[in-house]
Length: 427
Ligand code: NAD
Image (cartoon, rainbow, N blue to C red; front, side, top):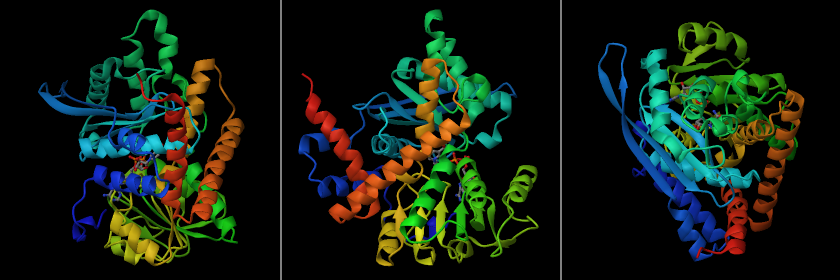
């Protein structure tokens, strides 16, 4: 649920917001003008319309996108979103954020994002499968194990990735089929997915909360956490942070919000949501309004739903000491300004939710080597890699006197700039 409709902020599309963040960081590090102009626009913007036969026999047209922002550091990498709000501005912004995220995490990947404008919850499973396969077919050679590697995002999951992989390998040469399995990450274990990938983004969010708590002279034990979104990122963040000793005091999704200052039983809420497809009505918590959710008495606020949620209207309600962005782009420019004015720390999306793409990288490595890593190995490598990115950001923020968002961009941009400087611009 969102309060953004009541926001008085000048309307800014998501790409304009992402560009403003980029320009601020580019100014802070005096990024060379030629590199700045290369990075201002995506390399490729692919959009297409494709037909899908519905269960009632009617053929419906859908619009699909893949935006490939940058690949100086390696193959394009980024999720596929199935949602009714998907448009080119959103996909461009999400693609650019992937370029910064993979660079910040020290991965040999670039940035991309894709999606289909649709309401996946209103499609039957066979319709969803036909839509996924036809979308993948339309993408054709625009994706590939060494070229552009999609993953799950809002409205997609391991089943969608399995269908994408299967469609892809059935359309490439017979000799490329084994290698072709690495064309997407976030697959099920049966189809070459990695242990630990499903929980990876939430796991990474929890490592970041833990690191912030230690830096603030506190412990994760006893922290009160509010979470917007109870899908992949929101649910796993809630489950893991409770396992680490914190308390989840409020949860909100698109169906409503629930709160319990004594702590919500996360497993119980998940079982209730799976059975009833909504959060309100759960016996272990009180149904609350969106404004009550944002104003929850908590230490940590985790937006883990969609973009533009913490606005000039909702940010002033937040009482947390830190906002940890599990979602991409959840905080608007006015929201950021309000949180900064009130001394609330924001740990930005490109750092906080990078656990997903880090484990996607591990999945890609396992596929290339035909290996399966144990969960302990995946978890240990994830922890090391995300905490290194966190240290780089906090050190850069200290040294350059920047907020964490700008510092995270600075680390990412400096790595990309170094590659451009070394390689030059062809010819
Ligand atoms: P998901 O589809 O599994 O869950 C989305 C959640 O957001 C659901 O609980 C839904 O009810 C909620 N939601 C949707 N619209 C809402 C609204 N208007 N108000 C309140 N809640 C709303 O998606 P996900 O994979 O958990 O992704 C969530 C966010 O995390 C997105 O911004 C995504 O880009 C980002 N992200 C996801 C991953 C990943 O590995 N899945 C990785 C990095 C970042």
